[in-house]
Image (cartoon, rainbow, N blue to C red):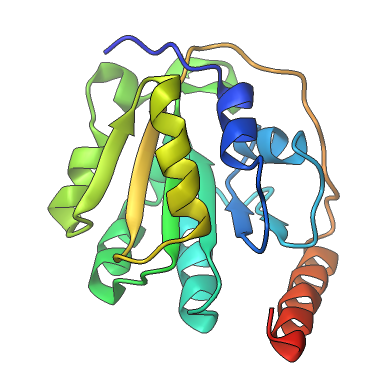
Amino acid sequence: MTATLDRRAAVARLLADRRDLVIVTGLGSPTYDVAACGEHDRNFHLWGAMGGAVAMGLGIALAQPQTPVAVVTGDGEALMGMGALATVALQQPANLTIVIIDNGLYEETGGQASHTGAGADLAAIARGCGIANAIVVTREEELPALATRLHAPSDGPALAVLKVAPGEAPRVLPGWDGPAQRLRTTAALLASRATGS
């Protein structure tokens, strides 16, 4: 499958109309891609917890069932945390969308080929776990429908694998302070609950 999407442009398209979406980002380039769209109180970046992004997103989605939650992570991080997909399927949070940016490489450790580059199909794995709405996105024309899903989920968890061209965009680094991020995101969610927005 030819990967033609530009990762930074695809993420920017998905987040163009951000609203009240909470985003958990996986290790490395997905964090830089989301940060390049502008830092936000509802961004929660997992700097060093490789394999933990889906589990963290699931926890937030279950705790905040009226709030749309997106996990934006990479193929390497998703491969490390595949067991979380089975738990997502078991819990069926309607407000959770997982976006896996798949360039077929372990970009953060030197660009070695990942399992997806050798044929592992993360969308098929997700469907096998019980996430019925799991798709592969290869064309820009498919992004608007995914963006709508991110901001208005309604039919159980969804997963989208974005097949992107290899190549690293310039790094945009958000804050590194984990406790400060947790407090910031928690405060944003509590404020919206208090105002009903």
